[in-house]
Image 1 (spheres, rainbow, N blue to C red):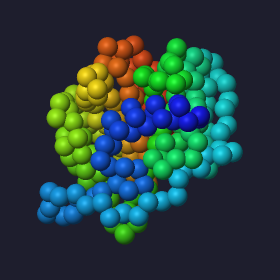
Image 2: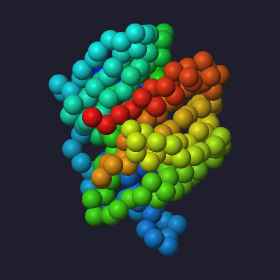
Image 3: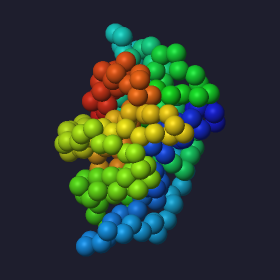
Length: 212
């Protein structure tokens, strides 16, 4: 993924999804405390070189990442762009039809976040941190719902919410699971007005996530 595309994804996907909970250094709430601390050491940037495998199917294509051990399917009219090495953990972005490579607005991202190795971070605990950071970062944050799901037969959680960035309203669907010391995060980000247009595609992509 080139720098301009990655920049667009970072500004909209990661800032919206985990504002204040940066990939590779996600703060974890101490027990019996409402405060967040951020003393986790940053990991090396994600390097996805040589990891991309694409196989065309009937109306869909398969994205496989051997380095990070997961696969997803996506509609053939979407565009998969693997990220360059980056400190935010974004591995790949899928752009909706007609999206501007230099300024994508409607897309799905797959992201991996390294969690503190000296702590056990549960799914509930991780959700608490994400919601706390979103509420503190966006005064107009509005939850549309949340619930438990499964991703690749692993317990997972999903959040749906709206926020406004630079006076532009966005709707976001965030799904994530934790395996070992990593969080696997799938995000559908869209302008609020166009969210429903690609919602079904995005949900199918998220549901297709599978560990290899």
